[in-house]
Length: 79
Image 1 (spheres, rainbow, N blue to C red):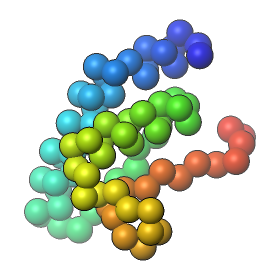
Image 2: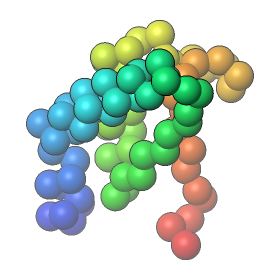
Image 3: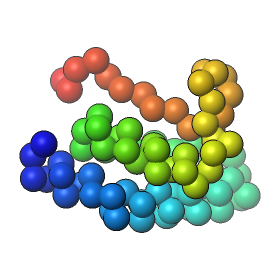
Image 4: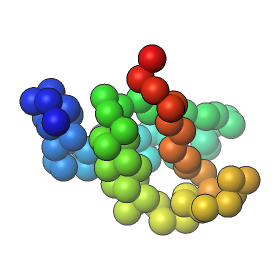
C-alpha cells in the first residue's frame, strides 16, 4: 500500500466517514428518493468502508442483486 492509501484506509477515518454517510443518507431519504456513490482510493479501502457501513446498518446488506441498499461496484481495471 502507498502511504496515501494507508492514510485514506485508516480505521478511524473510515469509521467517521461511514457514520457521516449513514446519517446524511438517511436524512436525505426522508426528504426525497436519492441514490449515492462513494469513491475510494483503492478497492481494498472500498471494501473496508463498505464493511464499516454494514456494521452500522446490517439490514442494508444483501447478496441478492435486487435487495439491500448498498452494493460495491468495481471496474476490472483502473483505466
